Length: 259
Ligand code: BGC
Image 1 (cartoon, rainbow, N blue to C red):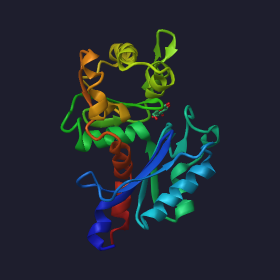
Image 2 (cartoon, rainbow, N blue to C red):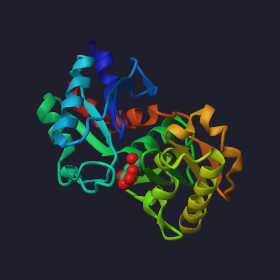
Image 3 (cartoon, helix red, strand yellow):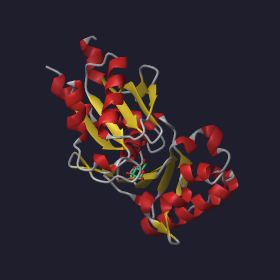
Image 4 (cartoon, rainbow, N blue to C red):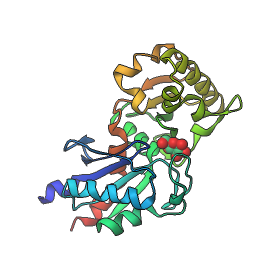
């Protein structure tokens, strides 16, 4: 790998409920520089099993540079601090150090919605927005990333707002849509209730809906049914946002490696 390439590429890895995906990312353009590799999330998704998959992804790309990892939990001062949709064995684990231990490479880790938010703010639907922007990733759970004047307020968990006595993500996640076999119309009603609550509590100026449901072919099935005071748009980077944001969070490690 030449010096210039090494300066701008970080391996982004996005750990999700059903798949662990990774690709090298050009952090200046936000583009994936190789086709992403996806490996099904091992069940149970214990730290040992997940780290084994991460090691496989690193090997797949013959990767020797920095790694950024997006993870579906709060990551506070390096340690996994919540475990809603992941193995409880992760609680307290310093993910970045564990990744470094198994791969021998420098690593950083952050919450998956924060990662997607960082990517959308830099390269996607939130570009140049300075007001209050809320990104929601709607998938297995609902994740949130809040930006005020372009700055991330890290580790928010707005997917867990109570909506009429039900946890927000249990009401309106994509997993619930699939599990309950809801039509897009039925599911959109639930998402609307959730968005009403979010708007009442946070009053964002822009809401970006991310995750698999933001893919254009899916967004067109329900987006028109939603009504918010805030501007409401689908994410532009779809499933790549987590990988790209993961890479961006390890950007500083590139500088550390440059002589
Ligand atoms: C978790 C969040 C995560 C979101 C999306 C939620 O259940 O609590 O930390 O960002 O799912 O994966």
